[in-house]
Image (cartoon, rainbow, N blue to C red; front, side, top):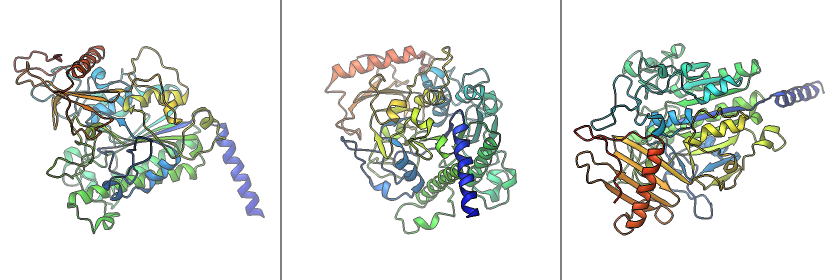
Length: 503
């Protein structure tokens, strides 16, 4: 009886603590280089909104992603920039890369503009003067926590240190875009191997067998506990280095892929996925242990298309059947997983009443990484200052499982650099998608492709030669948005700026 009474008292205390909390907690759980198919959770759907499984969904093991998806809503069509730094800057600002001008991945040491890239692109990244999501939340009384990969600015820049852009705490974040190593035995790159890309700030794990994803998770859970003890709402930006190369296997999960017919590196990549998934589950468990799961919204997403070492001679890569992968102009380069869920659904919870999330649902209407900023401000009740242009839309209506009739169902991804895809803008508007290549070597002869994603979601049938009127209209609309957002353009060999040419 005594134990039962104690349990009742403890439960009552937890309930009162949850009711007393004035603002919800927010976790953005960002995975590096994770594409739409790198999970057992099917994100793509048929026209009626039913999930459709593809072969890769049957290979990966991500039970905690499934746990989260069952509790919330996932997007079948969610877009990010095609490489890391532009997405991360867009997430922090709510602005498209065309506006904030971080249009390529940031190289720590040098200007990565590539041969014909714009001379004045923002390769030094975010500054202490920029309006950012963590700073706005910090000023509203949130404890802001950064854990993992930053990649907000080059070495020696203000953006190199997340604390300069509004985070109270920075764990393991710097200018680097990939880890020197995932192994504690190597000090995550410090003790041997790639010291130039070594993960900072985790010295207590050096020489141990603690895998990087696990070390970051333990540090995140410790910071969550501190915030609860201090009775402050928190914003956790949990930005895993996984699943970026190097593809070092997580030994905890390697046996799950011992019978695989895939290349060794692909199996190693799958272990990184599973380790990331365990991290998600560990954090969800911690929230429940602390009695704050009902008050905590989790936004799970990838930062660009997949880079899994998979592919075939027909050009089907790690996002198959979607075309392309990280760094490309096709759907596999820019469509990413996104799940939004309360960590523990409870329709009686006041936060959940004011910000409902439909459970075990798929949202087919478009969402983008630009939407995270305004959505979190909506969730937390923080008013926009009005002097910071935001290109994204509040996802509140869509997260509730409805259609937002006031949002633009479009996404413009501008990449005026050379990578896997060179000097291009991809522009989706409704069912139509345009890909425009600027061709700096022959600037008077740009090239383009046009697809109808409603009938051809895998971009197999280029309609640009057959539908000239639609092509011209799409290029014109693309050009208007580029100008409106202040885009920078590729340059030819003489330094002339290459803007879109409308046929």
